[in-house]
Image (cartoon, rainbow, N blue to C red):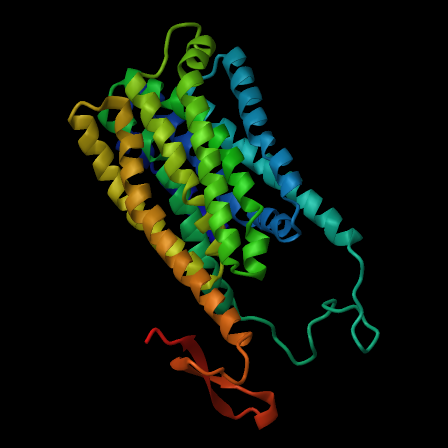
Length: 388
């Protein structure tokens, strides 16, 4: 429903010529720009319902297949750009390559998820029927309001993250030179495949954290993904400029300042990947949505300010480093640490012996329910060793 409503709105905005007015393009290019922007938005909105298939594969713990399929958007984008270049179309149409690649990727995910679902072994309940095949009689299922209230934070968090990563192009198109926009776009084209691989690597932890908020796993995941980000940043720092010079025929390469900023941004975003895959319940996605929206609201003016102060193409990644670290990495780590710490305390309390030995003093009483009391609330006391 959100995808359909958004598509209708995108078509209306494109028909009204809003995009060409916002970007101030010449009259002869206005129709093409409005059409390209409208198609891009419609394709993006189509990925919202199709994205459910990717989540199904994550829940099935098939991250290996997702990593393999994750190569599809880049390959489709490259093929589209090559074909469009050979056809001599306007450069603005090249922006359609990535949205088309994402639609193809999600369609393949949907096919794989459907096949896995069809071949999954049937689980029978006590009555001899397939469990989950039909809703219980008299049950209307979840209401549309509850579905939307649960899905809205996911939508906002996902859209906020995408807009945050892509905001630099819009800012530079409006406030910088064409050369700076081209320099940034080339650097971003090399950045996104690397980050996509790291993002797919982080997805491995989603089903594991959904089963258990293991504090040790959380620490190891943060260390592993941040270490992966450091290695990727080093590779980007060393190879981005020569690769850019190679693919552009020696005509364009990112500055050292832009290259270093993109490398640092890889580390910053990798440090947040564990929290993205841990905060996946309703309240967790609410936190993610809030952090993404605030980060986007701060990144855009910071990027504009950086451009006006002479940072050029390096302004967007520098702004992103600031907002990702302060508004995503640190708050996300604090929330995740509190949740995993609470899980550790709950496990410790559940495993505590009923009779405390001598030398222990009571601390942190809480209320629990004991089956032997018929469901009545009883006080359970956690004992800690006295320091006296």
